Image 1 (cartoon, rainbow over the protein chains, first blue to last red):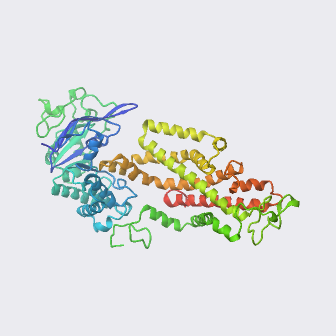
Image 2: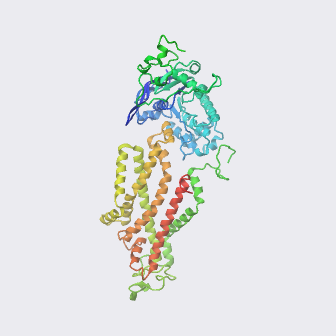
Length: 322
Length: 315
């Protein structure tokens, strides 16, 4: 059985101008020891998905089913989900500059989770925190544990965040744009670190990013999201060599690549849809260069075995997929 | 400091241990002359208030001892001698009409003044922080209710309502009554600030991160949000103290403060009004004391604000 099973997940934000459906019928499964990259533009529902898994949505209506190792999270009691958070599933955030409490020493902040979930004594938890810092490659961890967040660099802070997330040995790690706020050389170090701890501990990792380069580097599988729906799911290599959805092709085409055809990268024209009034049919059809007749009216379903995509081109018999 | 290239160094010789934001503020405070002056004056008055019995033992006059020999009945009770009767035993002169030692009354007045204003500030700060935090964190109907109550209390003309309230309250412990009444009218100011800060802190990333580690709500309130409120609360509380000193003096001046014979600066000033032409020195003593304490606490409050929020302010 999969560690994480998401079935038909919907996340809706009721607002004064109408309801925004940020995630619309998303399904996927994730095994231990695998990394799933979720890719999409801003507003595609990536972060709404991760917050739903963590049970952190306060104002949203969450529907469908999220099972972590057989435990249902959607609709579970607040206290039940709280006990899972940090213990069975942990999360690291985009901006390590603002995700640590400015007034507490980093060692205390890590020790806090040990005390919370394992009832560890103050002294034991402090030792655990030092070990956790050492595990993520913070030099002189015993001394650094006594420092405050403002004394750390950005990359080191993200290491601290990872140490905090991993302190209680969770099964699932959700990394929401973990490298976006970091500069490129530090990005590589942090990705290596995440990949390393994943190998060592057999973690399941959900990596949320808009950066296909990051996905190519660490993910096993990729889920491409558009307007709250998954448009394509594939193993990393397959996605990069044979993208099946026009949106995925557009994303790949908008990347500057050394091994690609010469010339400037081509951006996808237009903007992501307004989720208050999403377009009918396939949500991508207004921007799609390859749209056919049914696209504006019929919503394509995700079909196609091990490498499914939601596109009418794939089911139209006269049109062979390029 | 060990050879860690990652540690940002702000000063040439940083202390070896981790520098907490509070310690950094303390370092900034030590270089602020206005803060040091304010602190010195506050310390002087606090020491004076604490040591009042010792000081009056030195000059030999309690605050409530009458000294008829010090006043001139022919002049309707004006003190004998120049500058309100200052001499080797009466360091700041004698009270007109009664001959009580002005110095002794001043130091005992400092006790009352500081006691009432500090306690009233404590009441207002505690209540304001608790209610503002509740309103900001709970949101929804709780927030609405508490915010409306704050607006209501703030809309009272305070001094008039204080006078009315103190006059109506049964004559029990006047000091306690003043503390509660001043605290009651003071809490919404701090409550508003705390509510606003809590609203912005509630959705900060480190609070989300704490939620993601499974921290309980109670722990998030006390461990994540509250420490970040301490700086504005401290600044505002320090700036509330001089206001309360002034209010206590005003109420005593108007005759509804502490009951005589307990000495208070406002009461001394009210008495001095009738004598200012004959004995201006008697007016100067409580006046200068009030001026200095209010000034000192204000300087200190401003310095706290500058030290705790180095980006804001104009220094």
